Amino acid sequence: MAVTANRAAIQVPCPWHQDDMERFVEQHRQGRLPHALLLTGSAGIGKARLARSLAQTLLCQRPAGALPCGQCDACHLSAAGTHPDLQSLAPEGDSRVIKIDQVRRLVEFCSRTAQYNGARVALIAPAEALNRSAQNALLKTLEEPGEGMVLILISHQPSLLLPTVRSRCQRRSLPLPAAEPALRWLVPQVGEREAPALLAAAQGAPLRAVELQDAEWFAARGRLINELVAVAQGRVSPSQGAQALAAHDPRIMAQVLYGWLARAARLACCLDGQGEQSDMPSGEVHDPLVEPALAQLARAVPATRLLRVAQRVMEGRRQLLGGANPNKELLMEQWLLALGNR
Ligand SMILES: [Zn+2]
Image (cartoon, rainbow, N blue to C red; front, side):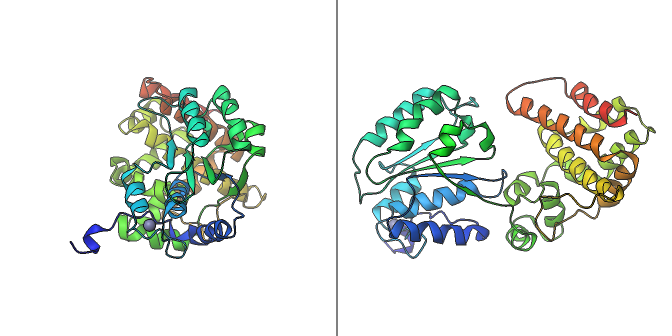
């Protein structure tokens, strides 16, 4: 059989994480890699990919620079998800939490010895899915994980972690990638025409931009943003506006609305002479189709109220992700009511 046909799928980090990857692998080579890493940053920037790639490289028997070789036994086992020295903890089934039983299995795993070349890795994502007792059950392991063990925790919301968990990890905050490398990565996947608009809708998080493609809302977004402006200007009732929004997946709409409101709030701050308040990297990408309407929204509604509505939308999104199944139109009407309040 040809060698190429026998290659395992290797996990490669996103291009903007290449430097982080090389630094971690170099630290490992020098025996200085912390035994508990906490990778933080926005959802959809590739933290989990970086972690999986690092795990596969640490376990690889013949790593090629900062990448796994894709040919050794360890690479094949990692790719198949059956490497005995690799454990992944994530919510199971429909659950939104990582249960304490899963943590106990991990603690047990950490107490064993390595079956392959020494390194053992545990991935926990998202770490905020550990409830308080599960986090407490992990503390001792974070402190003394055992010989050759590396624990990699991934978190979009590290503030939800116990301070005792955070303090036992070395934290690496991963920023949003700059627009240029993000677009270079995104264009081959979603097309040149749609990439900037999708990246804008995903607030600069490229992997989330991929998830947002092909949704019906995208084709309808010009109409949807105008509906939002019309509600803000009092030309359309919140319930009519909600009807238009409710035609689409509420979780995606919450995501998109949040992005629009946050962008409009930043524009409104500029109008107020308070300057651009942005955590976006330089070269922020905008969607030319919605940008004029966002400017209208910024003129119609003060920044503080836009942010309040954005907050409410985020809370709604969290409920939806948590499995709540509210009446979509009523939920969205609640969001829009706050927008039109004078
Ligand atoms: Zn390998």
